[in-house]
Length: 273
Length: 262
Ligand SMILES: Nc1ncnc2c1ncn2[C@@H]1O[C@H](COP(=O)(O)OP(=O)(O)O)[C@@H](O)[C@H]1O
Ligand SMILES: [Mg+2]
Image 1 (tube, rainbow over the protein chains, first blue to last red):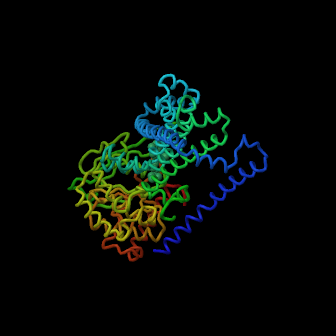
Image 2: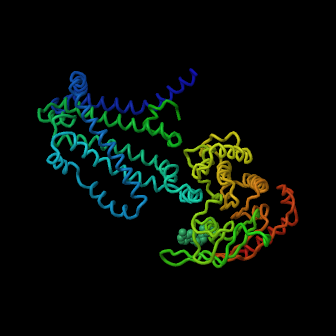
Image 3: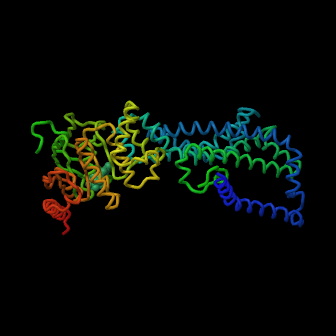
């Protein structure tokens, strides 16, 4: 038991040291740039100053972090549910597919930052415009990946299902949907990072809370340490949400994860391989 | 013809199949007729692309003929039939289900009684030598094991007709022989009617009562060979019999003639 435990930790260490080293190197470069005076301190604050601020102003940042995270998760969940439903409709109906595709593509191509002000005009400064921008950002990858997944099922498997006589609902529940899950998760992981961006963009356009607001304020005050701190927190939120999904994928699709090879959460995974 | 008194298990009457592709119309099967008696084992051989898979799809109702009629167990085939078992060249297993749960998919889709299906699955697992691998996932199984799972799944609901489309085509020679012996035993024990499409002449003769040789596309029945190998068909003993050698040689000659090689 102890040996297994030890091996496990050694495995974690082996997978972690490279990214950790790279991160340390980046911090070192950042530090060097600031101490050598290569760049003026008011343009790029030192890592020490930035992280010091992070700690000092934590209670202030925490409130805004929660606002942005809430908008992100809400937008992501709505995009996930809508995306899967639309994808299913598209896979089962040629007509819906050909009707919806151009609209979807159009909605995807429109720059969200350009239409975000419109949502503010329509819906005010509250939660809704941020969530809508997050949904718009996250929706497309969910639809595309789910459609791909649902279409990836073997024709032979579908032929077999037809001879088994379970009907379309059972075929979907037992065969098509589970088969699409690996693709769906890939789409969800992209979507969640985009949802963070969507929420922040929504906050940029009109808000008095959230990390987007913090950054905009800091920018206005030439408060670069706070700006950097805000950026770091946003990234951490995105990475954590991504890792959460990766973990969920591992738990829900062990059959897939075990064959997928190295992934981000091999860092977190309890069992090796 | 063996079954003049009983209704044939499968009856294909003057069937043609034409596919409409972008460039041209392809006739895959032309006026093929074939009766298979209940409990009979029929092998189908022919050049690649001649229409063998198409023939099995017709029998299962996955495909409708352009003309002619197909009757299965006394009922005309129109639309996918549920009273058959189908095995493809690729095992087509669900990656996320264990061997046993892949077999039980058949029961779940049909809404069979689960206790009974479970017992039947265990019987089949035992019969096909899958014991000990019930909980393995497909990617943990060898090709032969995967194909055994597919066979068990096809037999779970005790179909009276089993359709097999090059089921052992992807296996190595030794595993293939083993599977042949097992399939022969399963057939004797269950009394199922079997239609087997294969590229192996030895396999076709070892297993079948009759071998149907099809021509190049559009497929027509070139010759029907009655296989006269009474007895239990012990593998190596059967291989060594002079009737076996002469029958396989004859089929090889026929296939050489239809593919234009030799
Ligand atoms: N759905 C289809 N559409 C068009 N052509 C097809 C289709 N299915 C099969 N064919 C053609 O019909 C012929 C017979 O196919 P098949 O029955 O799969 O041959 P095989 O004897 O190798 O199993 C082939 O030439 C193939 O290209
Ligand atoms: Mg074929």
